[in-house]
Image 1: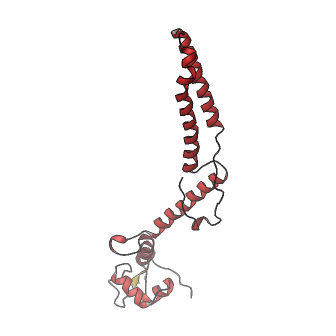
Image 2 (image 1 turned 90 degrees about the vertical axis):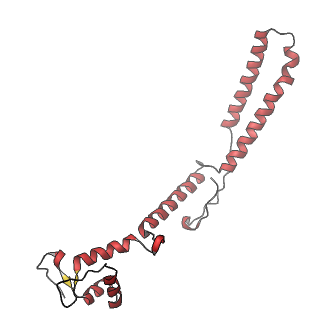
Length: 184
């Protein structure tokens, strides 16, 4: 059946049965929605017709607003959006790891720890290495030798940092939705 609307849409009324059919809801559910104030009855209609525009607007707003009861109300679409954002971010992290653009924090810590331990050992070894050579030298010569040794060690440190390689975990799951987070 085709209906032609001859009046303002905001003042149209329909039977509760027709609204239920249009929304795929039972008469009992329509009555519950009336009790909840979502479906609006026409106060001037003795047959119990409902306001079409207001009822549809309230119905769809309530569907998008919250799911749950009491203080545990959850905005379904907001939560779905947050979930999709988290999945996208996780996928971006895994892609960056696969491309070698991102490394596990533990891998970086291990490599840096090794490089800095070696650097520390070399610095601590400077006094023993140069003590005999510096004995009886002038202040300027001592400064020059020590400065040279420190610069040499700093150059080695820089080279070590530039050449540092990190082991990567190439186990990237196919389904990003089912993955478990890792330490990053």
